Length: 295
Image 1: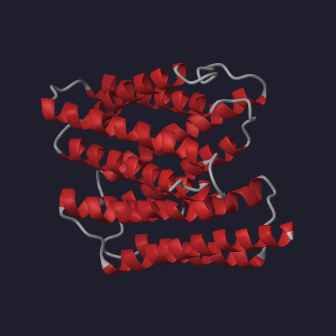
Image 2: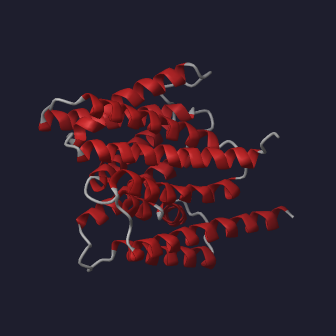
């Protein structure tokens, strides 16, 4: 039986979230085993950049490295957001459980909606605003300011959300003529350059064969995440597909338990559930508004 566009979109979204989470899992494993963070970033970036160049070269019109007009400035901002978010995310990931950090990252759709309203003047009603506030309370339950287990790494995780917001808002403003692979290649090259700069400061350490294999696996899953994320934007109804972004929290909980033997505590699970519920409510409400406008 042929899949509908929405079914394909759901599978692509789940594939994207699984790819990114597996990438995170392997990066946490190699840095936890002793590989310096910037060295891991450099090795992963070299593999992923080569892979993306090959894919772009085989895609008609996909290898456009120098955008024109406003796309050039937007791409610069997007790349800066990507570098900042990657660095802060991986730093936080080396110091906190995968599922806890993933729970914090679930606030991303709420943060993007709020900043789009503030910066791009996107209309936002009181229901969506209330959902954002409820989601923010869920984030507070996860990071628990003032609690004994609260530390600066939770704030580093929130800083990563801010970097992704910059990345996503600039991406929304790209012209339709700019290939998605262009943004992915520039992001990968910039993050790789950041890793190389860090290695110059930290120095190079010998790398076991297993660590090289795991870093290469991280790069492979990162490419899968990138490609699925690009394709999902072109298939199906986004209001139907977008809620499946939250499967990343389920993947993170399972992989954190299977690989590292860690599970989030009850308050983190409650906070994550509140954030996810707020985001899903906001997406469903937006779909209802669009259907009403169409009829």
